Length: 538
Ligand code: C6P
Image (cartoon, rainbow, N blue to C red; front, top):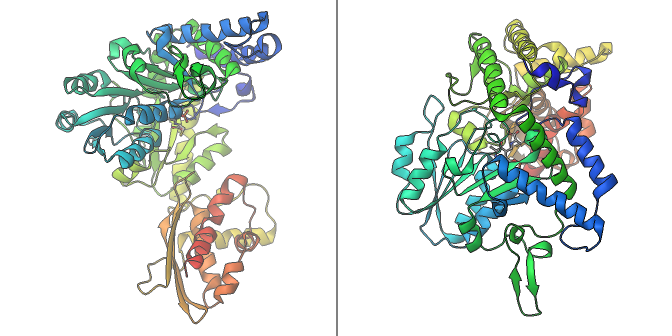
């Protein structure tokens, strides 16, 4: 298996970390780290400006990065624009293409999009009076292609679809969707944030008009990404940002734009990032994208087979491995994803827990998030085994605790006798939350969300002459946020509103009485934050 040698290329993995959060960002090989270091030590100068030798050296390197990326995805040099990442690429497209939209024009997205491929379109649709349509997903977690054909009509001007879902792992038939889009004269955008790192992608074969991805998900540094656009379309489009390298000529009255691709690269670009991206692409090319794909598929198939037979595990994604990437989202019965990811962390396994920046998808699925394990080139079969074993251990724990997380997981390390008592109390409040109900005749109500893990709390307060007569909460979340809400409401019932307004973070920590790790601080304080907003509204 290729991973044996590859793991050694990644310094951060030397201490035994099982890194399975690759869909969020990948680790960097020595080659990339060295390229960034060498850029600053040997090549650093601004590009397309200086006449001196160092500036020319830097410019040559920067342009080479465009050329290598163009080859990597089968594009032409002028068609490769460097951005900060996928999000910026999508914003650029929404802004620039959006200028030509009229009221009633339609933009077709899908229900499995990342927020970055929803929010920019929502904003532009609001501004222009355009309408968003979403291709639904089937119960097999695939796009409903019949519905896609119905939704893409003469009114459609833009179709923007994720290639590989960052939650489900589903690989969408973007070529087929591009055909539907082109039949009605719409442009086809592909969000390839998760696919370009894992599969050979050729923009001409996929027949898309635009494609965006991020360097940091494919071994390159953060802050550098790519927008591919068909030359003919880019020529017609308005720039997104103005100033710097995107200018040809400026007078006090007006300006003209530089040639492609620089027309879309305003200001001083991320030069060291480009050097890192160049090294990352070369590194992946040395491995071969076919091998990268085959490796991911093998691990995904292996882990999926083992995980899907555990009765308490629900995999959120296609059961069959065809057209599926190495991303596995799952939940286990009786344990919140946030608690499960913290349990896995204790086994030195890094996964993501929460909504994975795809809240509409989870609300469609009726789920409070998931944990997500995503594999990359340096992961091995042993890493998959470690994941499966840790999940099985969590399942056992959840069963033992009748659906409550392991007592030891509430807080790590040795606790004093007093803290042990508090821990029992926290578990009791999680298991049997006090005041968890809606109040009909409330004076104030407020809902807050923790965007990191997706915990929600709604607080209800009934004011009686400056006193909290009733206080309650609803929502869902991890053990810490739920216990904190329960303890807080119990403590504040009957108190003065003014006193409640002054209730502070330290007092919440005192109520919980156990050490709260940095990552859990937001969970612990979510109910207090919600309460303060509710009280402000009175
Ligand atoms: N998804 C994840 O953990 P940026 O942050 O701009 O590099 O990429 C945004 C983005 C857009 N589309 C898809 C399909 C993505 O997966 C992402 C990034 C990460 O799933 C971070 S939220």
